Structure formats: structure tokens, C-alpha cells
Amino acid sequence: MATGRGRLRTFAARPGECSETVNAGIKSLYLTPPRKPKLNVCFESMPSEILLKIFSYLDAVSLLSLGCVNKRFYDLANDNGIWLKLYSSSLHPKWKMKSKQTEAVSLGCAALHNKKPGYWKKEYIFKQTCAFKTRVMRLVKFLDPYTGLPCKNQEAMKVSGLSWIIVLKDKNGKEHVVEKPKLSFKDTSVTVLWYGTDWPGLDILSTLKLFGVTPLLPDQSRPPSKKGPRRFSLIAECHLDNLTESSVAVGADELVQLFSLSPGLLVGIWKEKNEIAFVMANLHYNQLLERSILGSATVQYTPPPNKPLLDDIDSEYGLHDYSLHLDLHGRSCVYLCGSFKCLFCRKGDIENGYLRLKVVSLKDNRKHFPITGTLGICWETDVFKGNVKDCFVMDLTLLDETGKPFWCFSAPLRMELSARSSGLYDYMGHIYTADYADSEGKVCVEFVWLEETKEYIIVSLVLYVSTKKVNSWYGTNY
Image (cartoon, rainbow, N blue to C red; front, top):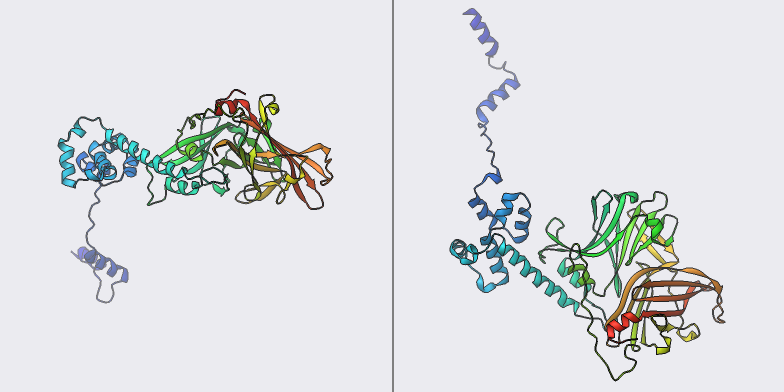
């Protein structure tokens, strides 16, 4: 017993002798409520009926995202009752039903029982896509009388949520997506610039793809999210094998070299590291929205063939009344913006499968005009900025006699010093040339550099349009 009393004395403290730690422990014992055991509630373990009820309160984008979680969620997110409710409420206001009516329909409506799972989801997406395309293409119909091109491209981009991305694929099949470009709008084109610090090595890359990207179900009330379902439209695909050897070198400065990829793509390569510094795309406005939206992830948009209007009265139909709008720029600065009317070609000027349209003649100095500023292409990255001299981007828009775009492109051109000197009395200086060619025609430009005024003068500009293009367009046989 004495031993027992001794043990009790060691724990029982006299008044005033109890330590603060012991007091705090006693208080916590009586004041702290007992902890409730945690319930491990798993969302996926809920009954399907409860999950369907929860899913019925979600919008279409959330349902599509849930369908990517697992097979069970995919099956539940395809429920015809949920999608019929969305379909009827958003596309057919007359069909709007109260929740009880919708539940009744989901149980006994033939529109549900006779359809396979996912039927109304496909119908909803199809109808929404058609309405979206109609809304965007309506904006494309507004044309600029000055250029003959759509004048509400920026508004259409905002409505559609359109953006452009590039996808770099390496030799192992891995894809690297580059987003968030910097845009620069001009009268007839938009320049898209991607840059960053996490580019994959150039030696392991095989292809570069340019896509127009839009939300699968655009919602104008909130900005598009790249995590939601999106629609891809292939615009261009280029091979990057032996880029520095197989591509056209446009120019270089102290830091980067520029290489041109068709159509209108520029790749900037760091000189020292032989790695990508930036990628630049020059996109002409002609059918830009169609190419960025109406194509698929694997097939580019194909424009409908032109329906020629036969003209038996005019013996030189297709040879005259062309109009040219020409822009020369360096991405962030414009060097030239001009229009030329009433361009024509005589039958005697048709040679080697081309119609020659003389825009600026070397002999007629009244049509010679100066270039504003020193020609060059501006570039930038997260850290550096630069300007590659003696090159520029040409935006060419050739309209037919009805004012319809006939031949359009936006492409970088390189200036080369000619071996001959200027024979013009008014302009004594070095001559530079810049040429462009594609399947539809060629462009030849000549500049004279005036050392005294530090400016270029365009003294010759000639277009060579393919007779195959003209015959296909007009239904002629030149």
C-alpha cells in the first residue's frame, strides 16, 4: 500500500505546484471535442443514378471533359437524356422544358430509346458547329473596297476564339506544342510570332505543323481555355530535316539566321547554338478564316474551284483590268503600301507559259517610288531583339476585273546585290533585286540604293502570271 501511495503522490500535485504543461494537458482533455473518423467518399463509387443527376447540371464543355476521365464517366457523359436537354434548350427555344418534363421525356421518349448512346451529343455538337461556322463566315463577307479582302478578321477571330499554334514533331514521334503567339496585323496579312526558351533541339526535329485552333463549343461569355475540347485545322506542314541546307536562307544578323519555309514561314536559328530562336508565320487574309477553321487536323482546307464567266465578246478576256495591292513590311514596320490599277497584258507578251503584267517600268521614272525606311525583318525573343537587314515580307493581292482575289500570298523575300550598276540618270547607285515564285506566278522587283538620301527606290516591278492559272480561272485557252 505504501508503494501504491507513493506512486499516487508522484502524479497528484498539490495546489499551486502543478506545472503549466500539465494544466494545459488537462484542459485539452476536457475541452477538445472528440475527433470524428474521416469518411473516405469516392466520387467514382457513387451510384450511376446520382452521377447522372449531377452531370445533368453541367454544361456541354464540362461533360466532354468528364468523358475523358475513364470509361464509366465516358458512358455516363454520353447519356442521351442529358444531351437532349442541352440540345433542346440551346438550339430550339420552343422545345424548352421544365426539369420534371425533361425527366419524364428521358424515361419514355422514343427520341431516347430508339437512339444509340451518344446520338444526341453528336447532334448537339454538329448543330453548334454549323451555327458557329455560319456566324464566323458571315463576318468574312464584309470586304474592304480598297483591297478586296475581308475587313473584319479581328472581329471574326474574337467571335470564334481563333488562335494559331505550331506543333514540332521529333524523330521519335514526340510532339511539342508551342502556343501564345504575338500577333501583328497589317492591311492584308497578319504576322504570327512564337518564341520562348524551351525549344527542342533542331537536330532531333522532323516536321513543323501550323494549325488554326478554335474551341469545339465556343462560348463568347468567357475566354477560350486550351484545356477544353478544341478543333484543329491544318494550315501548313514543313519538313525540318537538314533545315539549314535544304531551306532558303533569307538573311542573318549578329545573333540569328533566317530560313524560309513555304508558305510564308520563317525559322530563326541561333548562330552559336544551332537551335531555334523563334518561328514566324506570315498569313495572308485571303481565305484565312476558312483555312484556319474549315480544315481538319490532317487535311488542309481546299477552296472551291472558281466558276469562270465566259465572255465571247471580249477577245482578250482575262488579259486586262487587273488590280494590284502591294504591302512591304518587316513585321513591326511598314515600308510600302500601294495600289496599282488597270494592269494588262497583250497576247504578244505571253511567253513561256506566263502572262507579263508590267507594274513599274524601268524606263518610266514617273512611276518610280521610294521605300520608307531601311528594309529589314524585325524579330524578338524573351531576352533579345534584332533586325535582319536586306530582306522584307511581301504581301501581294492581285484582283481580277471583277475585284475578286485572283493571286495572293504573303512571303519573305531576300534582296541580292546585282552585278550591274544603275544606268538611270536620275538614280545613280547600286541595284538590288528580289524575286518570288510559286505555282501560280513569279514576281521580279528591282531597287536602287541612293547613298545620299539613304533610301531605296523601286524602279521595276513585273508580275508573271501562269497561263494555266488564267485559263483555269477564266475558262480561256491562252
